Amino acid sequence: MTDLIELVQQLGSPRVLVLGDVMLDRYVWGNAERISQEAPVILLHADRREERLGGASSVSTMLQALGARTSVIGIVGADGDGFHTKRILTDLGIDAAGVLTDSERPTTVKERYIGRAQALHPQQMIRVDYESRAPVSEAVERQLAAVLASKIREADIVLVSDYDKGVCTPGLLKSAVALAKARGIRVIADPTRGGDYNKYRGCSSMTPNRLEAGLATNRTIRTHYEALAAAAQLRVTLDLEAGIVTLDKDGMAFAHRDGRSRIFPTRPRQVYDITGAGDMVMATLGLALAAGADYDPAIRLANVAGGLEVEKIGVATVTREEILADLLHAPFQSAERAPRAAKVVALPQLLLELETRRRSGQKIAFTNGCFDVLHAGHVQYLAEARRQADYLVVAINSDESVRQLKGPTRPLNPVEARALVLAGLQDVDFVTIFADTTPLAVIEAIRPDVLVKGADYRKQEIVGAQFVESYGGRVHLAELRAGFSTTNLIERMKAA
Image (cartoon, rainbow, N blue to C red; front, side, top):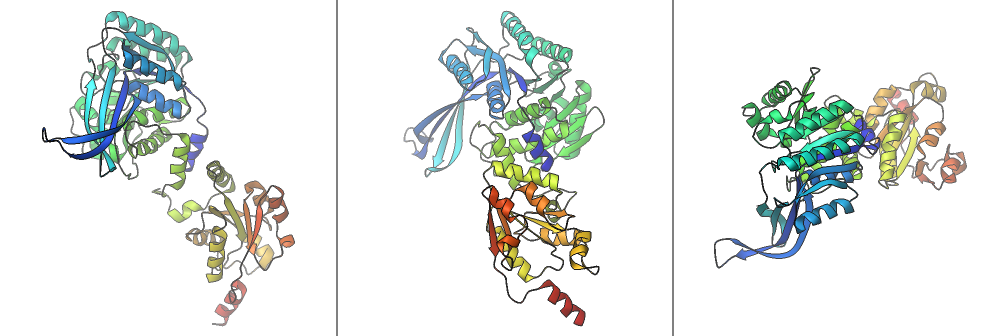
């Protein structure tokens, strides 16, 4: 996950232009108390009403929450919902100058009723849509094209959010692709379900879900092989840079023009509501690509953000801080590295990991040693060290460093083995290796909140103690457990 953490920290503030169907999502919340006496339907006792942006405006909202500079182009009706939608966009800091008013159509509104059973466990009961699916008139299309030509000059990427509400006409999308290619920027499309996908021809990429991709390629997508075949077919037939198929709990299938083809899995989530997951994937993927990331890390990051979205009710935003927290606390699932080995990191990578944790307000404890033959005294000592902060870093001496301190017969175990054994302990979060005879340089680089050493030391004898206290850190002397000594243990083994 380290490369994704670094990517999030380096996203910056790309300029993202969203073109598509601007919508308003309205939620009515209440307790599902009983069956109505008038009809066999659930009676909802409403107690809260909430409005959020949907469609292209939802993608814009998600991008803004993720730190992008966002502009949106679309249509609203000449009604109260349209006025309200534009005001919400503006209040969020989104450039809504490209949202035009069309008096011939209503503002698209999706009204959802959310019921709670016994005041708990909210579930969507029904959705009511107010909309027009007819294409915009030629006059409105020309107005949208003029706005697009103006706004694209400042964009780093264009995202097309097509919900089949009439904005994403073939002519307008053709203009978007041509203008983007002239500027050397990407166009990423989230397509509508069914219909003629030829209007997306020439886009850089597109992100249909399993059903949409199946309809577009005349396939039934059940396996990873079928998903990859569909992604490749879309890439070839629509002249895309990359075909991407989102596979809900199975992640994403990816087929690139350069021959790359793979499944990007996602980890299991507690799914509360899938509403908005596709928009979140689109927003995160577009943001990462606009920031200069390649498709591989951008897709993996979009998987994480989409997973966080389904853990929320309705169309909700996700922040960079939430993504970082999820990456930091996610279980290690790498196929290349075992969980223990993943804890063993070089100092530069460790500093990146710790910086992210500190941004979340977490504290770091540090201790060091040779840890040549691990025994119960070490385990108890490390457990006490871990209790001093949120994370424990253990720095261990290299083999040459141990020889300088302990003599030519030590260490008994090479540094790789010592590091792996320490990483197997639940109380140890990170292990790093240093070559000097003292850990001072490591301590100065890490700047731990708590420096831990055994109580057999006096504070003035502890390397780095004065430095740690100089910036407000503290030194903790851990209790020594009688009867445990590496040297005595080695002597007893020799005697045996």
